[in-house]
Structure formats: structure tokens, C-alpha cells
Length: 363
Image 1: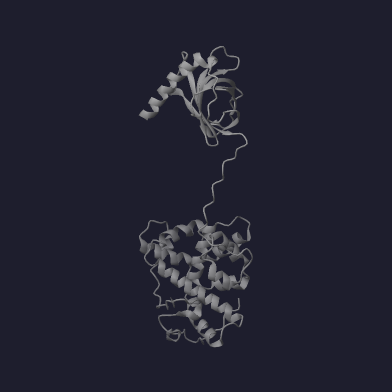
Image 2: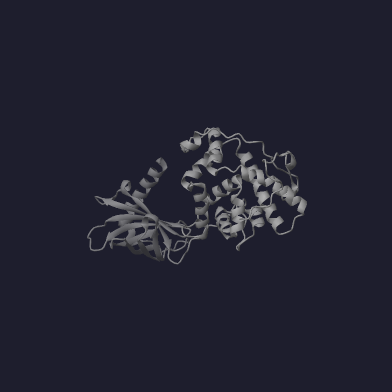
């Protein structure tokens, strides 16, 4: 601030001398670029226009304000190689000088310091700076930051491709491609609670445009869950602070792999024995389906994060769940056939009066 005050004081002294000298300007041309041309105000100077003409060291022109006021400019280059000019401004029709100015070159235009006159002297305390862009010059458009998401397919995908890629895509692409799935594929995902809870979180974050197919599919999912995104996302935010959220993602991934494997079985691309294992793993999970709200509420409670959660969910005692097989990915593997649960699928006790493996429900 002190340096700025000293600089402005020096400018004031120069400007006083310019008032008497501007009609007797030197004839030598400064080697810096000329001020000749038109300039348009930007930022605080929006709506202003500036026209300058340099003849030798003399600089004349007009400054027009948004309100229609016109100032005539009469000044000189500062001399040497500096890209500066200074002088007086006179409002059209006025008898006395109204203000002083100091101009400095900028890469795409210039900066004008407007200094009101007080008793014929520059009033630096009331000065203001305005930026102008040279007419015909366009500022370079800053490069857009590279997206942290890989490109998603532009066209509709099948359920296997969706399961393999949705976590890596931009949430908006995830919402768009989920909406492109056929009814059977979407219904298959909704049979599994953790898979649905994760996907609903990502679709809510995408906030698809109202009236779009993605918005309609999200609305169907929310109606089934009896919740909306405004209530669900804070729950997810609190749940993500829990130490068990990573375990939630592992279980959701396991369920998505069952969805993927079921689709491959439907196509006849998987041996019958493996499809029987898929059915045996999936049936107990479908029978123990829980709402996404309750899954996230349980994790939110364990995190201790402040969040408004429905009383009926926060007040419920956790339902005892039999241990679920937690999948571990074998290095370099992909797909359900490369998941090895902590316990054998045959070690899971099936519900009474129910034969396993079960055929996939006809959705």
C-alpha cells in the first residue's frame, strides 16, 4: 500500500506538469507500440469505449461512458520505451479540465487510471482504474481441464458393459446409460439392495435434467425406495465418513458381479454349473433385501457425522444379518468367475422349503 501511495504521488506530480506542457509535446516517436486504435471496456469499464490516436509523442482521442458522456483526451507519451501516456480529460461542453488520466499498455489492451480534478490538481484518493481490450483482439480461451473421468460410450450399452464401466464414468453418463438399459436389466439390478443403494447415490449426484429419460428412471428408483435425492444424498455423505463404507462398496460390487454373471447366463455364455453357483449366491441376497435408506442410515450412525436422518430409520435396532460371503478379486481377474467368497456358496444355509439353485426370477 505504501508503494502504491508513493507511485500515485509521483504520477500526480507528473500530471500537473503535463497540463502546462501537453501543447508543446516532443516530436520524437517512442519505440514502444503506438496507442492508436479503438478499445472496449471490460470488467468495471464495461460499456465504455476509448478511441486513441498517437502522432509522434502526442496522444489524443475520446472516452465515452455508458451514460453517454464524452471526454476529449489530450496527453503525451511518457517518453523512452515505456508504454505509458498521461494527460488531461475534458468533458464535452465544459470549460475547465474535468480529470487527468494515466494509461499503461497491457498485452491485449491498456489500463486507464481516471483521476478526478480537485481545485485544478489531481485527486489521487478518488482515482479509479479501468481495463480496456483492444478492438478486434480476442483473449485466448483457457484450456479446459482434462476430465478425471474416461469417455463413456455415446450409444446404449448392455448390462455387462454398464456393470463393468459405470463407476469410472461421469455420473451424468452413468445416468444416461442406465436409462438406456432394457427393463429386464434395470429390474435385475433393483433386486439387489447394496447395488441399488450405490447406483441411486451416483444417479442422484448426476442430477439429470427434468423430463429426460434419465430423470424418469431415477424417479422410478426413488419411488420404489420411498425417498428423494434431497434426503438421500446427506445420508450418503454421512455414511461415506464411516469406517465400514469401503465394506459397503465391496458388497455392492459383489452384487453387481452377480447381476453381470446372471446376464451372461441368460445369453448362454456361461457353463450351467457356474450358473447354478450364481443362483445359489444371489437368492439369499435377494431374500434379505433392505432399503437404501436403512443401509446408509446404519453407516451414518456408526460414523458419528451430523446428519438429519428419519427417526424411524435411526431408531431401528440393526437387524441381525448372517455373515455374507465377501468377494476378493484374484489379481488380474475380472468377472464373477474370478471372485472367491470367504466361504463356499454351499456353506450358506438355504431357507426351508426352497430348492437351490433357483432360476432367475422372471422380471
